[in-house]
Length: 174
Ligand code: HEM
Image (cartoon, helix red, strand yellow):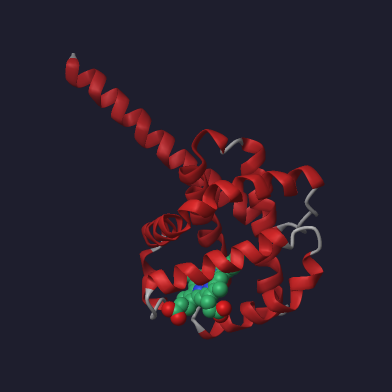
């Protein structure tokens, strides 16, 4: 009886976990593939507010990010040749610039395009962007806890889609 209850709880937890993984991957894929819609003023505010909650734990967040990324796709680990804490710092700094530029992304378009092209040299391919997006949403979920609402998730998924699309279109022109 006891084992039955434990088994059911475990089963439901695994199911929930898998569902979550699928949703976050679907989310980023959807916004990368579709023509990205611009963010509303409310969505920009949601991103900024939630980012303020993540910034104080940015070192931990970056660490969690790579952990999750390598869990979702162990094959990308070999692409990272430098020190991960150094790399994590660069990632968080770039995200910070992006969050501060959401009102007018045209100001950082060239920076994103150049970054997209550099990513080809690192061995990154288009499909990786979906995985990175899913890892990012997952980290936000961990860091924000109850503040990670559906609206926050959607706003971040759109923002990530806009960034990723700009990088991808510059790196792999049709
Ligand atoms: C929104 C998307 C992304 C952002 C903002 C981002 C940001 C960065 C930044 C700032 C760097 C430092 C070097 C540079 O500026 O060129 C970097 C390097 C790198 N990124 Fe990304 N990245 C993104 C997507 C990806 C994806 C999809 C992958 C695939 C796994 C990836 C893998 C790497 C690798 C392998 C490096 C080089 C690390 C090393 O030299 O050890 N990035 N990224």
